Amino acid sequence: MTYSVDETQRRAARVVGFAYLFVLVPALFAEFYASGQLIDYNDAAETARNIVAYERLFRLGIASNLIVFATGVRPSLLTQADGAGDRALTGAA
Image: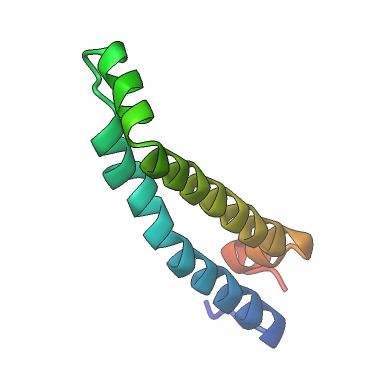
């Protein structure tokens, strides 16, 4: 069974692919570095002290998460706007 992919689907796939590559760096920063430096899972008071002491890192982590969210929503809307994602998965033309 062969599937045909038109140019609109290719363009949507490229946009989504680049968006996910773009979002990878802030996602890794926010989830692994910033959270790892700030959060003490055994001591809430220490976490609060870390947030106060490293306010810039806290703010950068939040900004990175917002970038990840904003960039992640756009590709999902693009693939669902014309059903390109569904057609690519099901093979329907």
